[in-house]
Length: 180
Picture 1 (cartoon, one colour):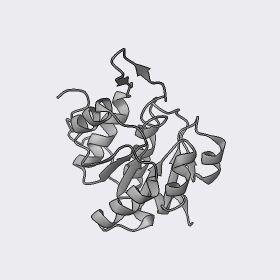
Picture 2: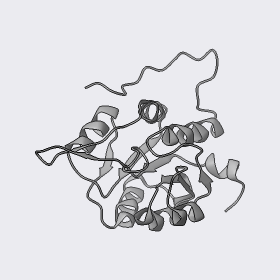
Picture 3: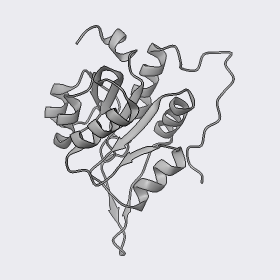
Picture 4: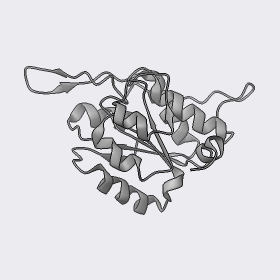
């Protein structure tokens, strides 16, 4: 591990867990057994903006269901791994597919299943309300909780460090965050 600002500027791939990172971890179960999750629009905007600027975004989650896949289809996320019991396997597959090194990857997780992949990337980060064990392995803890803008926070930091974030005078980038 080196200098935080230099290391975060190496990030080209943003990998995220879902429940507790993209959402607040709450799940509503319908009478039909479907899960309903709430996502933050600012997180979606930041991810879409990053992808438009050439970053790769991936989801690695133990969760499953149409509510997950629909959201990430809407955002245009190409790399979505659901129902993952061994997240490290999905991370290794992604690294091989994208031909990237560990130091080029940011992984944001919030609970024990995220620790192993977090130990294999250059920039492990977490939301403010992550499990203590996750905080201990993180290089950065967002001031925002899961589902409340923590993803926007870290994406913006990566893009600012690389000079890719919006600057006054730039033309605003329209992205899809909530429609089909």
